[in-house]
Length: 363
Ligand code: 13P
Ligand code: SF4
Image 1 (cartoon, rainbow, N blue to C red):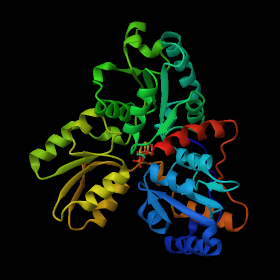
Image 2: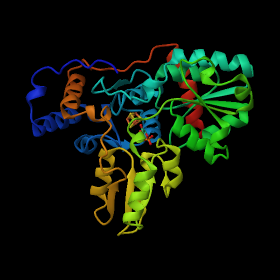
Image 3: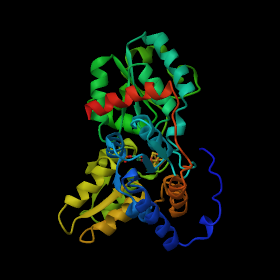
């Protein structure tokens, strides 16, 4: 996680109304020169004041399509702002209001560790036999590594299509950093969990034998999302025993046994749209981050919406973006000295772009 400097006066002492007034004033000053993107996991007051909300794919596509906006203020986490910077046009500027807004899962796959693992795998399987696929929840350095090797990025909305493509191009796929999304996706494509190899970083050959590696087509990096790891099969069974009318809808970052038992599985955008389209009176238990579950409940008053885990928490890093940081970031743009600019340097930028472009052309 990166360091965020403490905010200067007066931001820490302003109340919410004063902060909102500042943000609205800055939006009016900047007009079409600024766009505020908000991920579905953002706080309600941030989503309300933003211009666009969505999942990682929708926001990446939206960022790439911006022609007018000179400033893209990304209310999400670091890898999302990096992706927007990689996809931006000309001299657009991407701002992340709080540098401490990282992603624990993305931090689990360090590009140098991946490179070491790759060399080990290649020494057994040979060159050009493995396709690297990275979830968009990864650093720009890892996306660049994947791009250099002819690989591709995916999101939770298109993982199945992308991994299917990858396995048509080469004999095996190496999927980073989320073992659960990788496993759930490959299972839907017909691979058994036993046939997939879990690669443990830092252990020779990822803890596998050369024979096992030679026999496998799917290699999963041992990373996960600590937020989605909090959903269990036991919770689903308890809820169904209590009220069988509940339908379970979960994000594919959840463990396989949770996804297997769910009635519906998909990205944050899919979860929002599926519940919105369901009939009045429906009951849903949702397996994803809590800011989003609360918003869905508010926007669907004719339905019963609960978290699958009643002790569920927020994504702490997503939640770091608050009105204080957004007001500070917006004011800095108006003043002509934008703070927290995200810049991915060359050659990483071009290499990562090739992996992202490959995804966008298939989405
Ligand atoms: P989505 O692309 O589904 O919004 O997922 C992003 C994420 O970080 C989920 O934890
Ligand atoms: Fe990362 Fe998990 Fe937070 Fe999504 S919910 S941003 S994967 S830590």
